[in-house]
Length: 282
View 1 (spheres, rainbow, N blue to C red):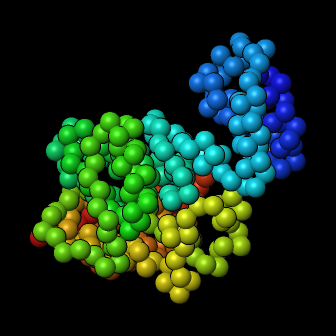
View 2 (cartoon, rainbow, N blue to C red):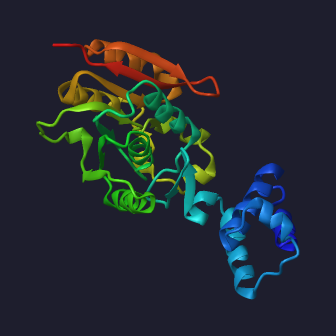
């Protein structure tokens, strides 16, 4: 087993930071064996079969082509849960965990809330919120049927109840339903920012979930906010993950639409990343 780890380290040296390669090696061995990191160290002299060696070589070749490790493994961790991921959905990120934590921290976790996640992708936000708010009724929209299939697989994997709908929020559906909380991590990377995107993201993660036109970077925020204005209950809350370059503009948009208590928060890296707004009483 240690020989396989050394082989991975050698093959990927110079392509990624050494600490990242070491992390990859343990993730690959964990996937192959089901061992914890401690068990890998204890069983370091265990030999792999030819089939296992072939899987390792396949993983190494994909990493050399900038395929994200999460897609190679087919899963990732988010907010204490494990999610299936593939190239139909974005890989959940730590900044989004911060958004879920904000929602968790300022709402009654035992209440019978109605929660909507718009642009659910893998379902990581919706499913994590159902886990944290067990009495809530959680609904999630996405335009991609492939993404919704992945999200449904994650509901089954985590044994939680979330309702999914294929919906284009830019052509918002007519509904009488009202929610206590609407949350969204919509596409927010502008086309001109493509040049700064890492190859493993640009070449493999779904552009449908990433990019917006340069001339309308708040396209989805405007549509979702207008939808929320009519479909949140009084004192209902709207939460966004945002492009760090448009924090002030997002706050202005929500304020202009009549939302109150609009708050902009930074992520752990010190970037503007999240906004919360509240619908006023009638």
